[in-house]
Image 1 (cartoon, rainbow, N blue to C red):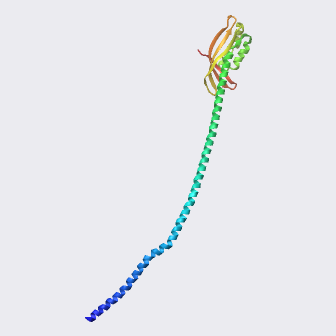
Image 2 (image 1 turned 180 degrees about the vertical axis):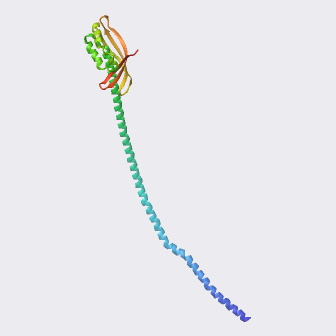
Image 3 (image 1 turned 90 degrees about the horizontal axis):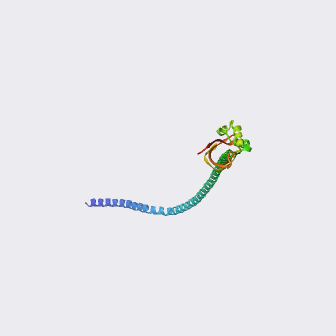
Length: 231
């Protein structure tokens, strides 16, 4: 019994001696593991701070560039706006000039139509016995088309009648207005007054007429191609 207990004691002592070194090693490993994060954290602190500083510096440079880029875009936008405004002004000026020229050309054309119609009626209502041939030639000088055809073969008989009756007539234009017009022709309403004397009347007579004169543009310029009485 004593021997058995002795053996058991030795076995426990042997087992106890083996457990002690294992526990010591585990404690040492735990201590090393505990110290490892702290020892690594200290040397990493400086690079992290440096990285933050670099990041700040990196952020500052693009911000300046972005501001400069923004100013550049503003300058470009202002320049573009100024260019567009300048072009708009030029275009407006050109269009205004063209419109004025078109209006001037239209007004000039209409004045020519009116003048031709007025002159036609004035020639037609003014005739004298002592200048009958010249007066009829003046009428024909601005006549064309149907209006001129009306005098074909009638010039000499008409001249004789005027001379024999000792006709003296003087025409005055009361008013003239365009009825319609385009680039090549126009219709003009003309109101005229005629003062007439002849061998059979002692007192002059005053007559009023309204004519519709068709003015046509041709190779010879503007002429009266048709003259109608208007009631």
